[in-house]
Length: 396
Image 1: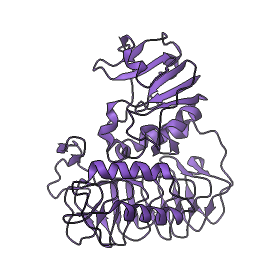
Image 2: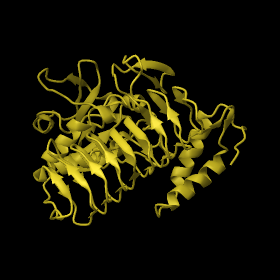
Image 3: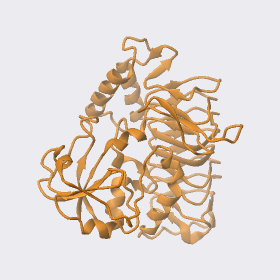
Image 4: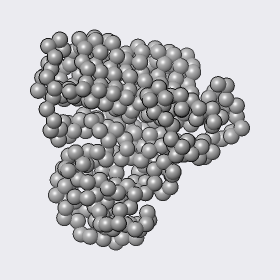
C-alpha cells in the first residue's frame, strides 16, 4: 500500500518536540513513527503533509501525483485491525472520529489544503485507535510501542558474547555492528534492542523494554531502567528510568533522568537531576506551551520535557513536571521554574540568534554533521516568533 502522513492541529499538544520537526520524524522505540508503517506492514511511505508552513523551509509538503492512503501522523501503527480497515477505505472521503479528529483518506491530493474539502464519514464504532496525544505519551506509552516494535522485528540477533551477563536471551537483539562490553542485560520481562553501531560499555546495566539506538552509547556504569528508549547518536550515563531520548543528545555523567523526554541536540550537565515525584505524591501539572497554561497530567510520575538544543549546567535540579523549550540555557543550583521559554539565556535575556546558530554548528560538528541552511532559516523564523525581546543580549 502507498501511503502519506499528514499532521492535524494535534501537533501543538506535542510542543516543544514538534517545534522543529513533524510528528512522523519523532524517534520512539526502535525507529521513527514514519518508519514503523513501512517496517510493520511493508507500506511505501511516499507523501508528507506538515500542518501549514510552520516547518518551512526545513520540511515542506511532498504530494505525489497519485492516489495515496493519507493517515494522521498521530495515529500509531499498532492500533488493532488498522491495516484491514485502511485497505477498505472508500476513495475521496475523509474518515473522522466521533470528536471530529481526521484519521485517514484515500485520495489524490494536489494542494496542501485539498483534503480539508472532502466529505466526512465517522469511523466504525468498533475500531480501536491508538494515538499519540500529548508529550507525556512519549514516556508513558513506551512499553506498548516497544512491544509492537518487537512483535514486528524480523532480523536475527548477532551471537551473544560470552562476557555479557544476560537474563532472557530470547528477548535480546544485538546488531552485528554493535559493541558490547562487560555489561548486564536483564531482558527477562521484555525486549532489549541494541542497534547498529551502538555501544554498551563495561559495567552498564540495561533492563527490559529498552532500546539503544544507532551510534548511541551507554557509558561506563550506566543504569538504564525499564521503558527507556534511546534514539540515535546519544551518550547516556548515570541513571535513566522510563525516559525517551529522541536523538543526538548527551547525558554523559552521573545524575537521574526519569519519566522524561529529551529532544535533539540537548546536553545535560554532570550531577543534574529531574524530580519526577512530588513530595505530596499528588498528580503532576505540566506547562502547555500552546495554551500558556499549567495542565493536569493525571500522572503521579512526570519529570522533564526538554526541547531541541536546550542544555543545562552542572548539578541542575529540575522541578517536578518541568518543560524546557528549544535553545533554552539553564544554569542554576536552585529548582527550575515549571517552564523555561525558548532561547532563554538568563533572567531577562535571550540568545542572539547568530550566536545561537554558531553554537548549533559546533554541537552538530561533534557528531560529524553540518547545520543545514534550511534548519538555520527555520531557527531564525522561530527566534523572531518566540522571543519577546529581540534585542536582548547574549553573554556567550
